[in-house]
Amino acid sequence: MKVYIVRHGETMVNASNKLQGRINSGLTDEGFKQCFKLREKFIDKKIDLIISSPLDRCRQTSKVLSNGQIPIIYTEKLLGRDHGEFTGMCRDSIDFKEYWNYYKNVKYQKAESVQDLYSRARDLLLELKKEYDDKNIIIVTHSGIIRVLYYYFNGIPKDGNLDEVVIENCSVYEYEV
Image (cartoon, rainbow, N blue to C red; front, side, top):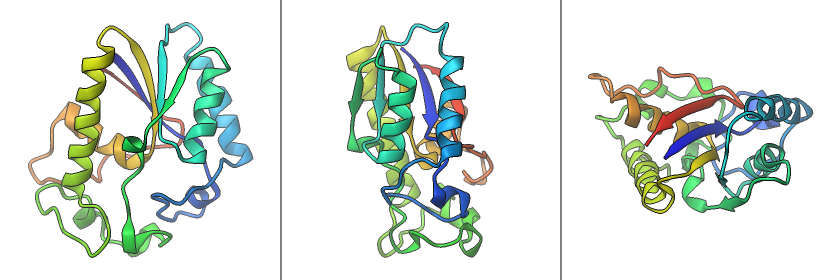
């Protein structure tokens, strides 16, 4: 199975440098432009299915990528990391080296732990492999899911810090599963 893991287009919350998590926001005009530009990268690729987070920003991104030609399935398993008490806070006000450290795996009052997020994303990927092994799939999701899957495929660093990779809006990560 080949997967193209895509982050949704820009939202106002992204543009304001805040933690969005499960806030349900739509794309900005710039976000839509990013999606249309990204769709061009898939024109020559055979895509069988799009699997997406159900939040509006991912739905909108998926619909642009699909262009009415590719079936879309929505699953809550692709929701971003539940930032809990950190939702809506400025990214600069949080110690991301601790927040994204796999080995420290800090348990917060409400926020989803990094190991729980990693397990959720990995388990979904393995489920998809069983069901769609011979397919080419676009997964449209959030930066946290993409981050942990990046380290699933590339290995967790010795220091456990999963904050080093930068996940831009409408970026694509391609993997063979």
